[in-house]
Image 1: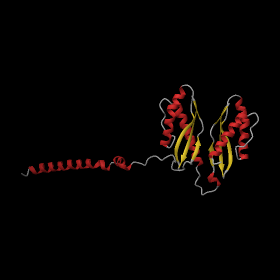
Image 2: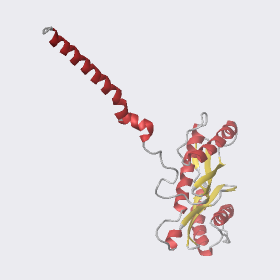
Image 3: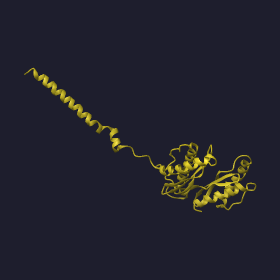
Image 4: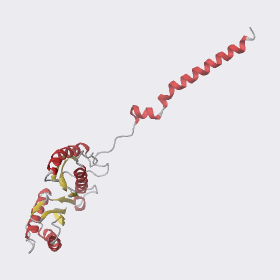
Length: 250
């Protein structure tokens, strides 16, 4: 009997060791950080379009036109309560096969922009260039919307400064689009973000646009004189300027 005691003790020790290993293995998943993250300890989801720092201003804002291989793409956003409530393409490639591509892709891109609340949206299959242009103009619109949101600086006219872009005005020689900066209820800056270009239009634009910009700030309205020799550009400028003023609240 005495010879059997060491064997019995060995068997009991082995059994205890096996039981301990099984117990440790059964406890490991509960203490695994990866399991805890999957069970609800994951990092918070990415922030919304506000970016956690500065919200986007309410109203309607139009992004810069993005040039693509098949034509310009330009996006307009409607923002309410700091969120995108509507997205639309005011310019998109057209003519020939582009009509079909645009009619298929743009509605899906509009919907994606509202859902994502950002420019981080997927390209539509078969519309790579249009999608890329859409995202570029969409990001521009978001940047402008953020710039138009009053900064939290404790008040004052500087906190109310905002930038508004008018609708694109189509002219015989190309589109014209005006952006204004408003502070304290006054136009402090006017600039043309789109103008006719190419050939003689370059010379006309370089001569007329600076004068039109200056006239807009001086007049504080779209009631400005046309520049001699730039009738169409002047008319398009005034039309887009009036659109920007309407968006800015007159």
